[in-house]
Length: 406
Image (cartoon, rainbow, N blue to C red; front, side):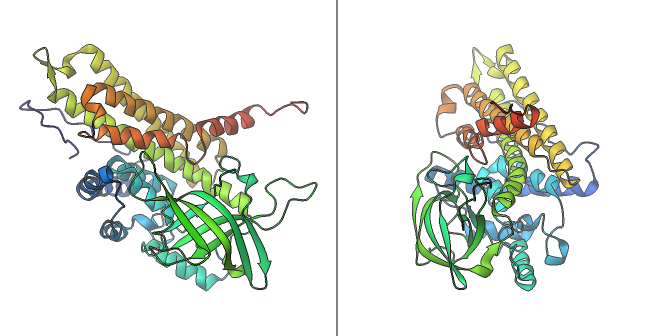
């Protein structure tokens, strides 16, 4: 299904097809995984091959096709038109989509009920239904020039003025902002008191907008990236932009953002597995196709052993993210586990996709093969949703608390 090399062998070996193994297997998951894999190969991959080299955006036609499959409402309750499934299925589908183009595995995170947790129940229900249909796809504005890993340092201000907040500040790394139906913005509504944590006084606000433009009071400048194409990442300026108080999302800005990040980190691990798996699958084809010294290079032991290590690491990371997603679905907070799997899977993906380039030799350093795209995208997974260094801090702080004098 995925093979894109001109294998000259009469009976080439094809990559093994990942399946949901016990104890997580159900017929429903098997069917969902197969459907996502077919969609990714037949609908996503051709678009990725065409648009990624020119830094093109995911076309609306593909987003509509994804909406028809239900990918934007995997975790939205059935009563609102979603699938009513959990983090396990969400991550499983994300792996399949990311195997074709990481941005497509990522765009589904900008629905799933995001930007819907407003106070009014009727409005919340309406937005949830739109989210499940792929009609409420957003952008999340957390980071700032001086507040990336340290979200407690957010300085964008929201000052109450009657029934509105007036927002002024600078946000960075806001993917999909212009094409979005909404932007969820982390702001500071008050300074922390003497005995409060630095994160006190943070809140999330919902900015409703038209697709393809910014409203008055918001300006944006695209950030040119080496990878992660498919949607544009923006640097945003808020200059006295008014947001209704009724558009405050959730009750605890910083805590809500942290809870969202736990699931996002497992989702990132799944996307990383998809990218690393892509490198393995592409190499299986290429190593049978490329001949040197009158043999396919896949006959040489050094090459075979490298491929074996790559495949083993992908399987290990998949098993880990499925385990953590399962725990999240059981209601465990999983802050440590989410950090662990994000750290391990993304570092694995960066290395395995790098190995994929090496196995392709000089051809791997061209844009003629997809393996360079897998590497460019995988490299980012070690940075966003909290860098590898931040994941190590989270893990260490939960294993070994600092002494009072530390």
